[in-house]
Image (cartoon, rainbow, N blue to C red):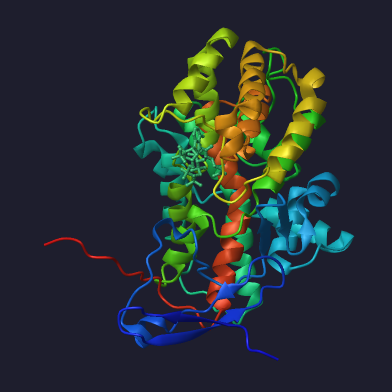
Length: 427
Ligand code: ACO
C-alpha cells in the first residue's frame, strides 16, 4: 500500500522533502513536519496557529464543521443532560465516568479541600475594593503555588491527582472570596454539607455566617433550577481542546513552572474579550445598546469594515456551523424562561440580536453563530449573578480541563519546551 505522505518541493532549488501523514482516531489528519527545519533550514509560518496541531491529546475532540464536542469520547449533550459537573471532572481526570461509590468518594474529597489557608485569605486585603475578581483570582491562584510543594512526581498518580483535586476544590472558594472582596463584604467559608455548585452559590450569596438573607428579593434560598443551570454551565466549560488559554497552560507547563502558576496564566489568558471575557462583554454590550429599536444600528456597526466594533458572543475559531454548547444552553434558556423570569428588556434585546444576526448575510456567509458566551451571559444574568463574575465562573468550569491538559503534557515523554520561531522583518 502506498505510504501516506506529503512531498514539499522548493521551487527555487528543486529540493524535495517527504513528510508522513498521521492518522487521527477522529477528525483531521495531521502532517508531521517536526523535522522540516532540520531538513530545509526553513520555518513554517502560521500566526494564530490556524493550521497547527501543537500536541497529541486524548482528552477532548471537536469537529467544528459538524458542531461536535466530546470529552474522553462522550458526547457533550449526553454529559450535560445526564451527568453532573463533578462526574465530568472525574471523567476528564480518569478517562471514564465514576461508579456510584467513586463519585461519592470524589465528592467528599472535593468538599474537604475547599477551605483556604488563613495566610492566603489575607492576600485579598492587598487588592483595591473595586478590583475585578479575575485580577484577584489569577493572583490568588499564583500565590496558592507558594502553599503547596512544587515538585509533582508524575509516576505517582495519587500525588498528581491530589494536586488536581485541590485546585478544582479551591477555585470556587477563591472566586467567591474575590467577588466578596470586590463588594467589601465578609467572606463566607465553604460548607462541607453542600455539594460543589450549591456551595459556590452559597459562598457568593449568603449573609456572613452562611445563612441566606431570605427577605431580600433575588437572594432567597438557592433554587434547584439555579444549581442545575450553573452545574450545566460548568460542564459545558470543562474543557475545549487546544483553545488560547489551554495553549498558554501547556506553554507554561513546558517551562517546568508550578502547575498552579500554569493555571493562573490560563486564567489571565481567559480574561480577554476575544476568549472567556466575551460573556461579560455580551451583557455589557446589550446594556449599552439599551433598547430593541437600536439593535439594527449596532448590527450595521458590527458589519462595517471600517469600524472595529464586533458583536460579542458571535463567531468562533473552530465552530463554523454551530457551537454545540450554545445549542444546549439555548434549550436550557428556553426551559428556564418562566422559572427565572427571563422576559426582561435585556432578554428582548438579546433575542432581537440573535434573530437579525442569524438571518443577515454578513453573519451567515462568515459562519458567525451565537457562541457559548452569548447564552451564558444571558443565563447568568437571570441567575442574578453580576457581570464581573461571569468569567470567574468560566474559570471554575475550565480549571479541570487546564489541569487535565497539564497532566497529559507532563506525562508525554516527547513533550518539549514551547519555543516557536519568527519571520524576521526588522533591520
Ligand atoms: N462581529 C462581527 N464580525 C465578526 C465577528 C463578530 N463577532 N467575528 C468575526 N467577524 C468577522 C471578521 O471581521 C472577519 O470579517 P472579514 O472576513 O470581512 O474580515 C470574519 O468575520 C472572520 O473573523 P476572524 O476574526 O478572522 O475570525 P477568528 O476565527 O479569528 O475569530 C473570534 C474568532 C475571536 C471568536 C471572533 O469571532 C470574535 O471576535 N468574536 C467576538 C468575541 C467572542 O464572542 N468571543 C468568544 C469566543 S468563544 C470562547 O472563547 C469561549
